[in-house]
Image (cartoon, rainbow, N blue to C red; front, top):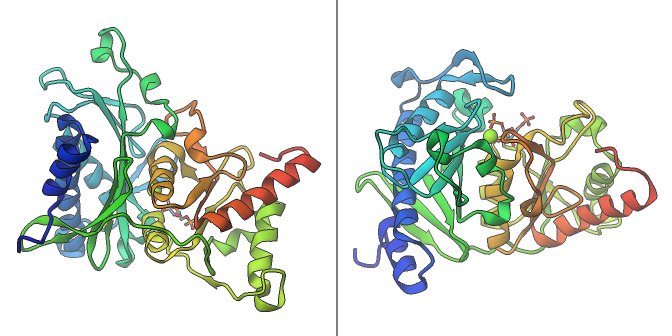
Length: 347
Ligand code: AHM
Ligand code: MG
């Protein structure tokens, strides 16, 4: 029993040995993990908990919300608002930022989340998850809204102090980085705690597996088409090897597979909505996943630059995402950059 390391013990040890995690951040991460346990319970109940189906409302991005999108959002807000670790929160499912109410103590961190990623998979019992990112609130004078504004959230991903996700699948798995590698925990339901199952996860640099929604092929830009065409050509093509394809349509689950056995994940810009840089959200999805992937030895770009170096200009900003095994991500990125030397960017 003593060899089992709980999330709490792991975080305390990181704090003690590496001095990486200030107390407030450690406690905040424990609260997020507790909220994920609550969401996991709702997910598990499914139809008998009355949590499936549409909520018949739209979020700020015009997407229909599922009941679980809203439940997960509320669980995260309620768990985190009173702990004293946070100044404000932002979510894919809320129009603006949520400032911690005055009646609660104020903390120095900002929490961002996609409360329920993979919404289209909720009702069909396929893995879904929660993605989160933690930033430090910039120093500034206390004023309206406890001195927090949307502007405070607009920090590049390289400023994250913690990032993680929780997959609600056959197991409930929490993956976390605080900038010192990536650790994975599995929820022990009988004990009610997350147990460390792997520390220092590494993504293989090469892969024979790609993840992309192939139904959008006709809308892709030339570099993405070229990369996938070459994968599909297999042994007989320029790559000289056969590739396999997976697409779960839950980014958390696709990224978790890549963390486990390598691969490349792409949700690139495409011509369906040319004015949008991509489908996925920079602050709630791309940044936390990019940091986790980099911390595990992988790479993450938007085709032109490192995702973590993008300066956000809007809370709900979208981005083109290419991440996973380092050598493959670099290959696709080179296809983009060499194209941009020849012709103007479409994006
Ligand atoms: P969501 O956060 O509303 O669930 O949307 C994001 C999801 C990702 O998890 C997934 O990679 C992608 O959307 C799937 O999109 P598509 O249905 O176009 O394949
Ligand atoms: Mg999502």
